Length: 302
View 1 (cartoon, helix red, strand yellow):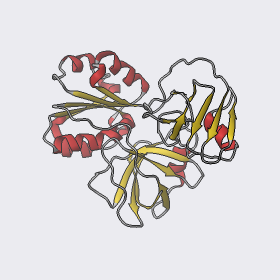
View 2 (cartoon, rainbow, N blue to C red; view 1 turned 90 degrees about the horizontal axis):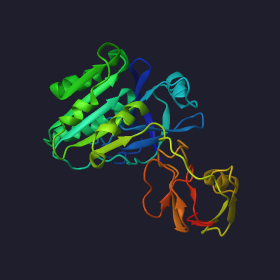
View 3 (tube, one colour; view 1 turned 45 degrees about the vertical axis):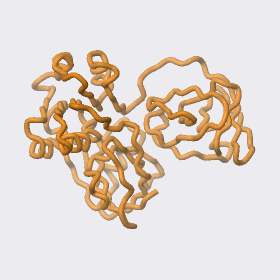
View 4 (cartoon, rainbow, N blue to C red; view 1 turned 135 degrees about the horizontal axis):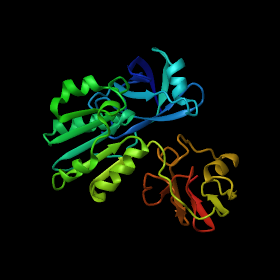
């Protein structure tokens, strides 16, 4: 964890605040466009937010948080109780949504999904790569960073207020896509589902707020062997591996508990995991908040 100070907090759209977090112990850890961090909130919750500032700025991080009345308490705490001058512990950046090389980019943002795409657009245009951003939201008042985008990127940015203009024509955008161009999309599930229907799968990259609905076989019991301690933990069908480890005295840091943030990653030394995450776990790793085992026994590096 890195200790930071809230240097600035301010409203940037209806129900959206931006936090500038300044490091208190020297330069903050480097990051690349698409990265996110965990914020350890004072109410004992940990939440993930995309970094939306400038990667060249090693003195501070910027995140933006939309208030969600149906959230589990994270966004409500940020909006109601966080103030300038408060210290927050912040994780090292993680990136499951990297900007890959391409001859051209199309960025599609829906609402608060603009946050990981802001630094991507800056990096792409800074490198001289032709890039377009289509940014949709219910109204201009609900869309953070519109003025910043217009002033910095001008005609590269198309702002779509859907209440007045309707939703962007994704099929038309797909038909006009240049050969080899990559599409990066972040927004609500309906936007991602529509985009997946029309853009080439091998050049379409998405980051989700919540996991994609999928069906798995019924949960089966298995045992997890903690290699460093030698303890064997029984995981029942109605319990996640994450919770079973915690109850056995091996707590693993976690955030979303939905398989989309990656904060609970553990190393698998033996056995076959059943990956149920939306990230795509690297070989030899798994996310125990949602993933389970296809083999009767897993050995994890704990």
